[in-house]
Image 1: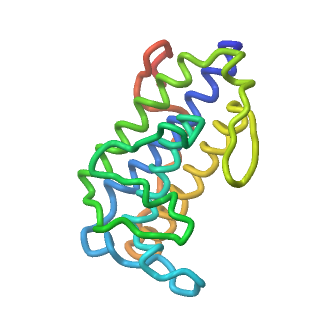
Image 2 (image 1 turned 60 degrees about the vertical axis):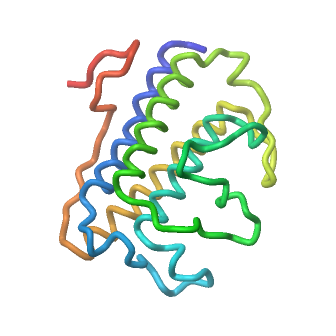
Length: 181
């Protein structure tokens, strides 16, 4: 895969992860378990700040794997997100646990993208919702991550007046990539 595309996707995907991290770090303790919306058909617990962040991280991790087969998130996380009945984890996850999961996902993203070959990018990935190339799955994953980072930022802005800061490129130096100035 051409270096220019690998670097662009790496920078933008890492930026989406960085924006998710900003939200996790900025959330006041009193908002951690507060539902972000209640006008939905799903139970309000599915819109709790911690759960939306966890949901985003779980799918980052899974989709970077390219397949459900053999996928297991790191402890203490489970496969509850894959339950077709929509099952919440057995307990609320802490900020520290989710920041550790975020670090795991960031590292996995960097390794995956730094090692991405043309053949891997073209591989078909199969999920219950359909089939897609690994390259397209990466872009979909990046959009999903940014969508939830934006939801979390909007909620924090509404509740605290916090002004979200846009990250235009990966702010941390990545292996094999120039540092963002």
